[in-house]
Length: 623
Ligand code: ADP
Image (cartoon, rainbow, N blue to C red; front, top):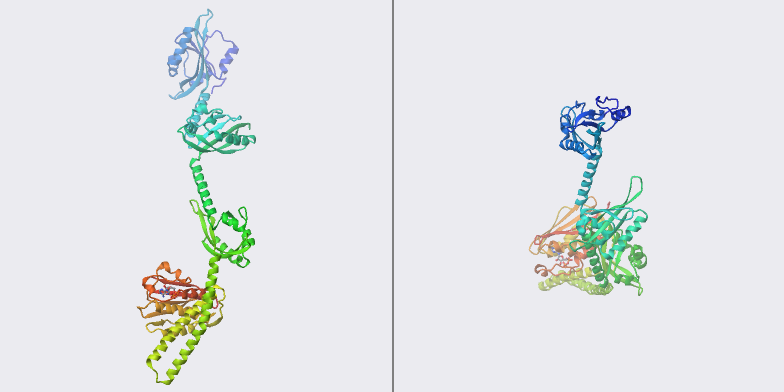
């Protein structure tokens, strides 16, 4: 930086100076040089220029020698002014100045070249004044670079970007928008962009914009664009108000995102939802859906008719307070809530009021959890229910019949059994027995026993169905019971050995006869389904909270897919092998129900043709 105190190099030839002019030369913050004659001999330089050139000795030297770095352009301009005697200007002139140590620094100057004359008005030389505009030029260059960078970035964006001024006129769109619409940049300016919007959407999107701009609020909308390739494209537009540094509203800046795929998916979803609704509405079953918060989100027509409502019942309390049979309410809610919390499938049978005729109908309702999205998040339940009243009534008739028939059969069978026992006792006492007669009586006795067991099981089934099976629990030694039962079954088994491992003397609290019935069923099955083996093992193990009794056979075994089903009522495995065994498929059902009522568990471990291990557990007394 030059300082006014620095000495200027005035030559005595400068005859027009006065003190004011001298001071101006001395203090000027721009370079001044007086170049004499056509070859520009340096007659005068001001301190600014002198300093710029690192105090280089330039006086009385022609310009090409004094400043070899200035370049031909500069020298030519001086010569031109000298020749024409006309003032000339040059802007943003790039000047490289050697600043000592051979260091070259780049400057930019606005030059004014003015001819000066001696007193005979003849041209004497050229005065050069240069204003340092380096900062201005560099700032302009930086701005241009930034603008280019901004353009490159916005053009590379996958979204269309735009700005509007205070009056809503477009002032900028990026290349993405131009590419989409095929309309030149200039054509989009002002209101030109609207031509690319599908006619039906124009009013709506402008309305959305105006509503937002009234309150200078961010705005969102969507509309369709007519693409250059003739296709239609959905875009979601968002805009944010922008402000000048002084806080004055400057318009909006925003973007448009291509949401065509999203819209297509949404439409597909709507279509499939519509399809689902029409299928669901025409189905003669009760179909419903809930959200993850248990609130109902859908009921089909059948449901609405059943409950006699016109609209969706999103209130979960409605069902329980108005429609459920008071006796079933607790069980239904309990099952539903438990399944919901574990997000598990459920099936419930319960009575529900059909509002149209005020009759309670039996409904078999199945619910399945719904999982949605990429991450399969839990979205609630979908379920369907059927009116199973007719089925329930048939079942009732069947149960009543089984109950009645088995009850009626029991009396004559008991009497036949008593007479057989009497005859056997008499013949055994007499000693002169007819062997054939005695054998026949034995066979009849065995068959009567089988029949009795069957009838007892049937009676139990009917009791269970009607909730009449009661338990007479007492405390007893499990080991005694197992021994007795094993002995009894062993007595009737001619072919098998029932081998019992050591049983700890353990007392439990249960219905003794019923537990014996379960064990008898396991043992007789083990013998029945292992005709080619001669051994059945019984094993007892005691855990912390329960005792587990296991009956293992080495017979035909059970396929994995059948293992759950065999505990169902009247279920028998179908197969060539199994058909040779007589049975009704109720023994295991009754056994499982008895154990369930004792809060125990029943299960089987088996492989086809490799025997079966049946287990039941009972809670320990202290548990
Ligand atoms: P039932 O034996 O009268 O048919 P259950 O209820 O006792 O009725 O048994 C149901 C079915 O389970 C049987 O039909 C049989 O197919 C199968 N099952 C039961 N126990 C065994 C066993 N120990 N080994 C193989 N299959 C068995």
